[in-house]
Amino acid sequence: GYQINPYALSYPICVAEDERFTSRGITSLHSPQARTLTRKKFSQLKESNKLEDTGYEPCVRDYLSTYLNRPDVQEAIHATVGAEWDECSDPVWLQWDLASFYEKQMKYYIELVQGDYDLNMLVFSGDDDSVCATTGTQFWIYDLGVEVKPDHWWDNWHVDGQTAGYFAQFELDKVNITSNSSFVFATVHHAGHEVPAYKPKEAFDLWERFLTQNWDVSSGADVHSGAKDEVFLGDALVGDEEE
Image (tube, rainbow, N blue to C red; front, side):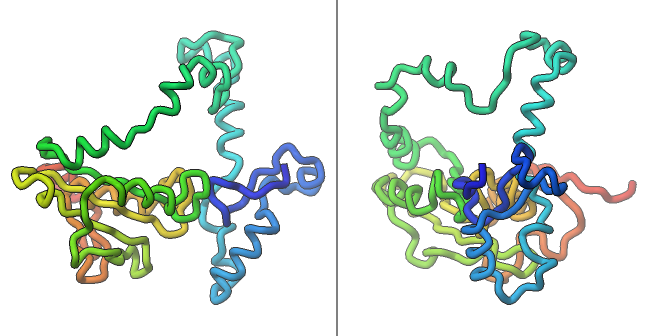
């Protein structure tokens, strides 16, 4: 419908099934609310640089549903031919015991951040998402019983010289002196619910930082700024250099 996208408030919505637009060759557009937000947030940008040219495709979920409901595809992936696939299935959801479904998960996070598990943990949130909003994520994170490191409140991180979001690093050794774990909360600026779909480059930078545990933002550059096309995977380094 002609609605705002709650998963990414200032991004286009899909109108592929709305004849008011498909009759004119239009399959996606900003809702009026999103256009207002865009003008306010990006008033300094030229029209060609705004969200329509970010590469985001608002109808991709519809395309995926159509593809996965094709009999030949269902047969190829050994699914039940003729079954209707949907990304959010009410029949599956209704099978859950409601008491289990609504059980609070905080106790598990408290155990992880205060325990002696030697884990590197990252929670990230796109700040354009209203379904799992950044404010809601902060609400439960700040109730875990661990404090933010005094010098790491909202470290500004960058990709291509632009603000990509903010980091908050937590002091886990204050609640468990033997812990070698780490816990970071990151926001991804102008990303929606599925961060890589809206901000793929920033998502990759964040993923690389997590793998290498490089949260240094003092230089104001992204983690691979000035480096060759390489991907760090733990102790391994995978690149495209010629042999």
